[in-house]
Amino acid sequence: MPRTAKTPKPDRLAELRLEARRVLHAALDLEAEQATPEAAYRSQELFYGAMQLSREDAVIKRCIKALRINPNNPDPMLLLARFVGGSPDEQIALHERIVLAGERDLGKKNIEIFKGHFWGFVETRPYMRALHTLARLYEKAGQLPKAVQIYEQMLKLNPNDNQGVRYALLGHYLALNKLGDARKLWNRYDQEHSAFWAWGKVLLEFLAGNLEAAQEALGVARKINPHAESYLGGWKPLPKELPGFYSPGQDSEAIYCFVELGAAWVKNPHAQRWLEQH
Image (cartoon, rainbow, N blue to C red; front, side, top):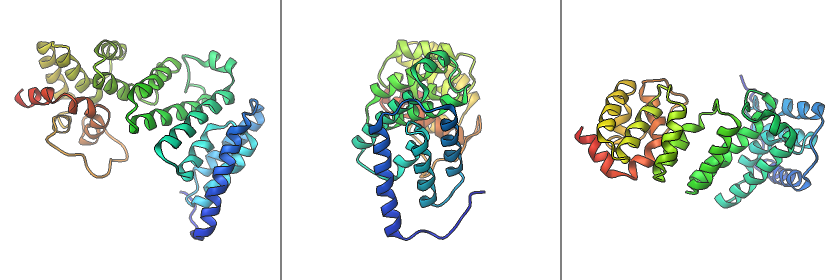
């Protein structure tokens, strides 16, 4: 369990946040060489320790220590970025630089060596987390083409897709009417039996004009997760707070299915009307 302690004074917390901003930007400005394996390990262990803490001041202090040991470590950077604030554009610019730091952290040689097997090697995970965070920021800013580029890059690095970015990517392809790309992606993981893939297939076939295939896919999707239909069709609003996790076939999975695919369905109200009629 995370350790708890007294909440720090507001003035001290504000000072720490300013220090976090200074240290974070100083580390990025440094554009340091790749850290030694020993330094990289110590920095990462400090980050893991920070994740076990509950007090913001303790988290910030631990992450600052981690960055001073390895100025290119994306994990403490990502955590500190939560505390430094800034506009959406500023956050995007900051995380673009964090991704570049992640590339320096791994080194070009290792990126080529690990390509196709990322996430399977622990040292690649901070970089993958940085990419994922940046993609989500692009999504929130409505910059879907940039988010798509990041997700495509992530799938090249890690075809096994341990982070599940294929779900968001399928939703973006459908929202952008990139049906050819959507079909290639769907076929690439065609053995998957999730609400995301089942309901994505329904919309894909409908938008492609394959109504018979869409009807068939609808039958399959309803068996895999019948709860998703109400969200995707626009008949049921999302809860104010997302569940902490989801279970296959349950309402929790349906909620996350809408998170990833909902924008594509909402953008195609004729598909929602067809769904209601069938």
